[in-house]
Length: 349
Image 1 (spheres, one colour):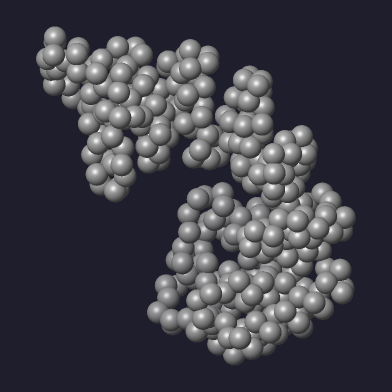
Image 2 (image 1 turned 45 degrees about the vertical axis):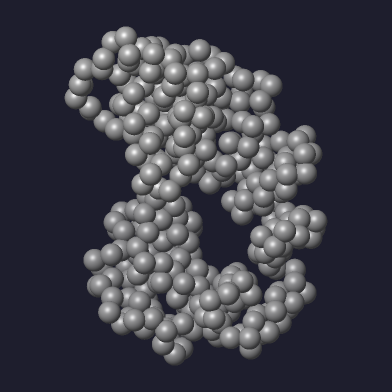
């Protein structure tokens, strides 16, 4: 098995593990065979021996048990939008140890990880062995090998091959969270090919199979597809925005500004996007202030856009991007000089 060498300078496991209450709830949700009390000595032993030779495990421990705990840690990362490098390394180790214990899912993950590696972490011999494992898993019709094979082809731009593998996966596993990811990616492929009806069907399948935290992008893509139906389009963009999907904020802002004519909502969406560093939302906020003739806020926003672009190496020339609005602002300032106003926020509405 392919084992990486990690530094031994790590914090105590108990100091970095998420709250026990959250781990216990997810173990219950994922129908774990063991409770946290039984898991802890096992996880501690793995954490203390990251990157070392094979470990001995109690006879009743399965590879699927280790992979399930990795799934718990991964889910917590997703839900909390946080990441600890030592826990991520622990996740990797759990996958490797699970593969050693015969978990086909883990073996699939490790094999494709080796195949994708460009850092030199895995040797050429490792990659040859990984391909053999993948071939064996295909002969066994293990579902995950088709999903990850489709992902690999998709990332390589082999979209037709990706779709073939995805179809094999959904035939074997039609109703799981992984199926939701597969339907989303198939929707992306058909969207890129301008087959919008097919894309819509796959995105809709995706959002039916998984919680919103996993399918925010599917909602966003449906918002784009339903462009001719602004109310439905707005709904899907708003669903994506609830999960912090960055692209949705500018879209919602401009919809509220230009179609629904709701300046208040437009400014709120633009403000949230601006605080995430989306320069399109900053420009949208400038547009909103110009529309309501809030010249002081417009000037403040334009100055901050200039500062932001300089700090981030962007070419955002407002005199070119918003020529008429900037001229209108300058004309007003010439007639009535700006007085200073205390800022409550960088992008205060």
